[in-house]
Length: 447
Image (cartoon, one colour):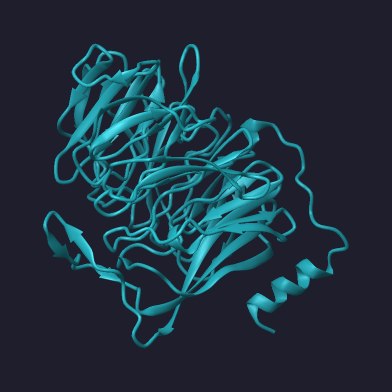
């Protein structure tokens, strides 16, 4: 019996669909970078030391490849994964332009093959696969970076349904029992042959997606009714392709949806899509999710220019070169990983794990050049808890850095396989998706 058919039989044998068990928000990690989209947990008693055997409560294999993070609600963990298949004769990606000429990235691959994109559900307590569903199987619209996958966007859940976004291959809504409630295509979204990296954001009754593509002629942000996939609003954007996820920010008198981008950073009313303010953008290919705290939002990018800009929430119109721009820094930013804001400080992080600690309110640099104990490359974004920052490297090392205005590396925890996805924190445990397995790290447990 195949892995797939066993999971299908398990789910169909259930008399009724699984229902979401009520759980406190602190116990859930419901979307990309957690409850507020910032990578910060307020939980206590989490481990700071582990290895491939120490403090591993369980680990379970994951079929295929994916850099989406796990999300957790109650006793359910959700992931997406992509499985590459055979070559499809004649299949090829769309033509891309960069400036006035045709552009083909040297690391673009994948559009000539069949791909199967799946949503997986695991039991949080023991790691057992409860169900898997094939959301899409067939030809994909565009290439991906050879280091990336077609399952890089992290799903989101409201405790009743899970929403998985695969870019051009569609958005899929499942209930907790694995039943497909609805699916929605937003059409082809060209990504310069790099793949999709954006994750869905939930706000009240809406699923919000940032869809920036190629040269920006067709870029937009869209909000769908999370109950049925009906389009509620759409805001066109003249912004080149990005792989960033928008964030919900609480200004003093309103809620703002912040979307970063190369040409401009903008705030929208999340209920209507109306633009509230905009500012000069990052100036580069934007991957990092904006940081929010102390009444400001920090957007950043690193290619072809390095830039981090802090903008005060609550503005109107074009706020470029106005007092709404609190500070700007033109070095120390990362390309792939998002940075992190924790307490009074923002920790700007490069792809080599070099940290710059900045006072959020003033931009004052507390330290720069903070390094991890050994050379490493990072695709995963950091998370924070109990005055610790966790930096997960592609070598499988998770470095523990003490939060605060002085750089201090306090530990290195190694697993036996690479880590590209960002960790999740929920119910007293850290969930790490490595290249082949999902790990549950908890104090006092051995595999």
